[in-house]
Length: 555
Image (tube, rainbow, N blue to C red; front, side, top):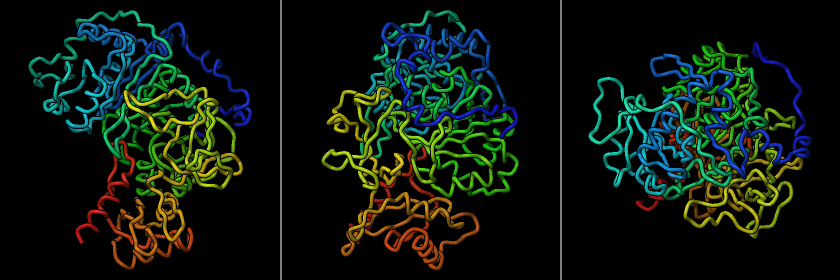
C-alpha cells in the first residue's frame, strides 16, 4: 500500500445496495434539489473556508501551480461577473474551447456560479464539429485561447469570443481579452440558485454514427457523480487524484473536474499530451495514488514494458478505467508491473457511470467483466422484444428507469430518444448477465459479429490478441462473407521490434484459436500503423467496416 494511505474496511456491495437511499445522497449536498443549489457552491464555495488545495496544474513546460478552493472561488466570481456583463443569464450556455489549464476550471465554475450551463468543446475538434455543437446549444459565449481561436473563424454566427492569450499574442478584433477583462471584475458574485431539474452542463454524444446529439445534464446528476467518486473510485482524503481524461469529454468533465471538487478533493490537470514518460513522471512527482483514464492509455503503458514502470511500482493504490472495455491482459499486467488493482467501469455520456468494479465496495472482480450496477441503479439485459433475460443469455444492457433513482438522463436535446421506451433506457451495448449478478460486455450492438450462426463479440477476440507480445493494439470487425455471413478480421498495431509478416499473422490466428475457441478467431489480419479513434480515444470500428465495404465495392 502506498505510503500515507490509511487502511480501512470496505463495505460489502450487497450491504451498500440494501441501504441505498437517494435522500442520503442528497444529504451530501450543501444546497437543496427542490429549493435551490448552485454547482459552483457545491464544487467550490463550501470547501473554501478550509483553504485546502483544489487544483494542481502542470503546464507543458513542467511548471507546477496549485490553487486553493478560496482562490477558485474568487476566480469564479470574476468570471461570473464577466459573463453577466456579456449578457449571459441563468440557463444560457457558455462553451469552453480550452486545454487543461487553470482557465478551463475557472470558466466552468464561473459559468455555474452565474447559473448558466457549461458546454465542453474538445480542442481537437475542427470548425464543423464546433459549429454543430454551438448551433445545437445556442451558446452565448465561447471562451478559448490563442492556439484554438482560428477554428472559430469558419463558424457561422459565432457567439461572443473571450480569448485567453499570453503577453505579446495578438487579439482578434471584437474579441475580449480574458486577463484584462477579469482584472476589471469584482471577486464577489452571489451564486445564482437553481433547482435539481435545471441544467448545468450541455454535453454531446461522440457522433460515431451520425451528427452528435445534445445531452442535457441537470443539477441532480451531482448525486450520481458524487456516488461514483465514493463507491467506484473510492476517493479518500489522503489520496492524490489524477484523472487523465480531457474535460472536453464526459469522463473528464464529470470525473476529473466535477466529481473530485464536489467531494472537496483536489484534482490534477496536465496540459501536455499523453506519453508514457510524462505519466510516470507526474505519478512520481506528485505522489499520485488514485489514477483514472482510458484503456487506450493503459495499453500504451503496458506496451512500454515493466522496466519503464518500475519507478512507480507500488505507488498507486487504485486505478480506474472507463471509455471502452478493459482487456484482461491489462489487468494482469498492472498487477504484476505496477502492483496496482485496475478496475473496469462502464458508463455513457447520457448516464455517467452505472456498472462498475467498485474499488470502494467489496464484491467479486472478474477480469473482462464490467462489474455490478452502482447502488442507485438497477440494470437488466433485454431481448429484442424488450423482455428481461436471465444469466448467460446475450442481450442489450438497459437501465430500469423506475428503480434507478440516480438516473438523470431523460432524453436528447430537442430530439426524440428511441432508446427510452417501455420503462427502460437501452444503452445499445450487448452484454450477458452472469449468475453472480455481474455484467460481461460483448460489444456495441452494431459491433457484434455473426459468423456461421455464432455471435462473436469483438472484445473477446481483441482481448485474446492483445495477450500476444507482438500486439500493441487491435480492433476486430466482421467482414461480409458469402459462406459464413461474416468472418472475423483483426486490424493489428504491432509492438516495437515486430514485423507484420504472413508468418506472424498465422501465429496470431493460432494464438486466438488456442486462447478463445475454434470459431471465434480472425480469419483475416491486417497490420496497420494506427487505429481510427474518436478524440476521446474510443476505437471507431464503424470506420474500419466502412473501409472494408468501400474495398469490396471497388473490386
